[in-house]
Image 1: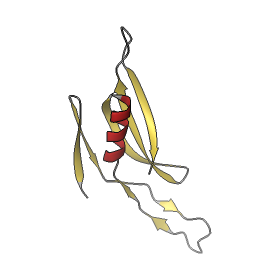
Image 2: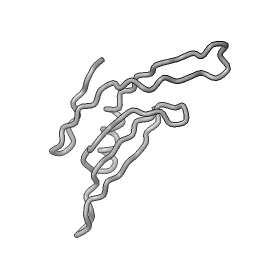
Image 3: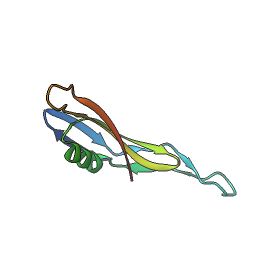
Length: 92
């Protein structure tokens, strides 16, 4: 298992290849279980670049049987507005 340090602004966040929950494949004679590892560092860097925000968290999850990276960033407000917390799911 490898770990990558991703720096966004003044926040350094460590992301790792996170094992996904076990998935069951429908239609198999016996229940087949597969483990999937997803590295979300690339997706996190892409979202930070696109939003201009600071990375708060990056995690791998399963949504509808598909592996996704859930990236949360803090996007600066315009003018006197407060910063906004934005969460984006990136399919893998």
